Image (cartoon, rainbow, N blue to C red; front, side, top):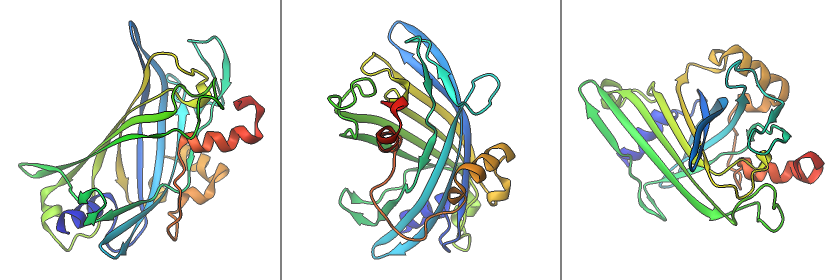
Length: 257
């Protein structure tokens, strides 16, 4: 249970306060015998609250993230796809909720929080390896989906001070972080089953609060999705992803079909 509580302290706050995590980085295309290609900048924010439940904690979160022009770093509305010659609408990330249950003895075995201690620092990692039926079956979305199985890797690292980890009185451990994601083409890119993957490479930090989110990103969220400035109050399911959100948007927006 202590391993689980340590990870809650790093990722959120044992006391149940809202925690804001911000990140920024870039998105690349990795294509056999081509590139690599620098496609987008990427910047986002997640607001989380950890709530105790029997056997562990629920992590209640929402997250918003935005694709940027790789040079100007401005938030994109449209994108000229260099691989297809088509201009497409950009669908940003508005995932509500993104909830998790962390249980000391869950269905996949005892909770583990891998860490490496070096001198005055402790580094935690969480590797999320995904393979599940795609929300966008190829037969329904032939231009947007390359497989009936969604496969991706989400690789997180959290960097903390050993003194904070060793002090049980610190319920909210400050941290910086890195995040790497390897995933299929985004549905709105209309790349279907073309060979290749997207690689996201980002870094960020746990912030003191919403006011510390960079002004441009904070303003965009306030204007387009103000609920994303706060964590959910209670558990709900299923989680939203870029794929499920695309499916919902495509149902009412012909430009995504």
